[in-house]
Length: 290
Image (cartoon, rainbow, N blue to C red; front, side):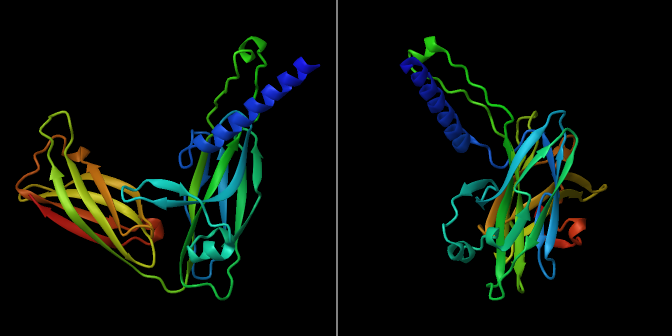
């Protein structure tokens, strides 16, 4: 009887240890190619009161996902770091977090292979909400269908072991923009690294500077404009954001279009533009004489 109770206790300890490891090691912003989420960002502004997210199972297995809001901040190199939200709603709103402004359903879904689930978001904005941009991330967190443990008495006598299994998830930013907001953008700190090593592509470093009450999101294009001959596109980078957490985002861009040409006797033209689906238009531009 005691041996049976000890075995159950060891299994419970292992189970709790694995759950703890899940919570600590869970990758927040990347996901194995199991599901697709569309769109990849939600913006509620002006008179928009609702939105719909599609979660698509691209595998041949049944998947279960928990859906919840989390908070993050952007660093100057563009990476996203998870942060702990304040416990009170008032404090969260003072920190321009969007999670208390949005109701959504369902909170958990089970998707058969190839199926699509709609997640509906509804804005619930108080009348006295302060002007500004509120942001949270909507996280789709995989829940494994089966977690199996082996009760091996020989190993248990020497202690207990932890079985690790990666839990995948994907998150998208959700914005609530309230009132008249503004943003100004400038491209600075241009520097070309030609890389003397012939196997390495030239690289362009730059900074996108943001000021104002709103984040910015756009596509970067780098062109080489020679003194003679036609211009060439050296690279295009889709979907570069600078959130209100930071005033400057630093980037280093590889230039694959320069692989077979010499970057001299001309200039580099860099543009940062709104995506066509957002209406297009250049947000900032700059030139670097070579």
